Image 1 (cartoon, rainbow, N blue to C red):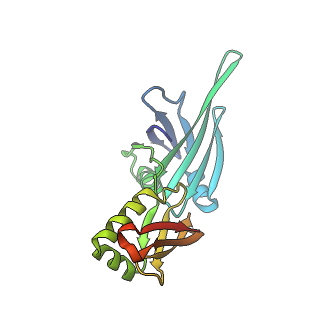
Image 2 (cartoon, helix red, strand yellow; image 1 turned 45 degrees about the vertical axis):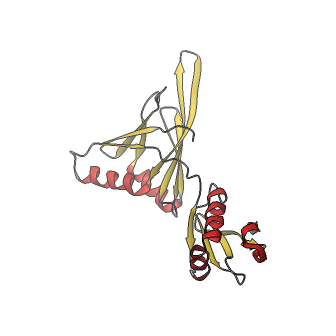
Image 3 (cartoon, one colour; image 1 turned 90 degrees about the horizontal axis):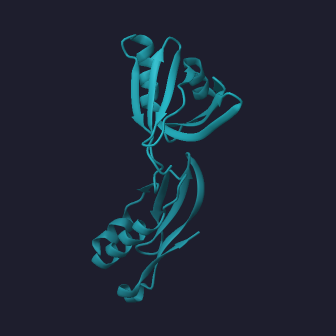
Length: 205
């Protein structure tokens, strides 16, 4: 998503009412989601629901602890039917906390949150430390490694990349994880170590 969207949620009885607002526009009406729909989303992973002619797909991304909602807002004026589509991402824990508190306490009626932005890069996790410590201890290698990690692994839809020691000094084996599931694997190898000033890291998959 290129812009942040404010999501306003109000509670009334067994329903939560969603509205979206951006700098230039807002949703044509509120969208009602039953509390039972949220529970079904948790159990089944996703639900499709409709309200006032519009519809929405709610998807629970368990590993990322977020709820992705794709709204299709429809509005009929006379014989003309207009609409727009938008997708927002909300913290699962924050949304469910509001749903629970508003059900228990009638004075809790409103919650607002900015739609989460897609992360530009996944989390980098060094599961083994020997080669990492060696690389960071050498000023030249440290600079090359930091620059390489900065400029690579900008993989959307990937939540983390785990690194392990490679037999080659200052080098690593990596494995990608998408939504908690293993993805591609490969190596981050420092080539040309005979002349460290000219040595370069390269990505192998």
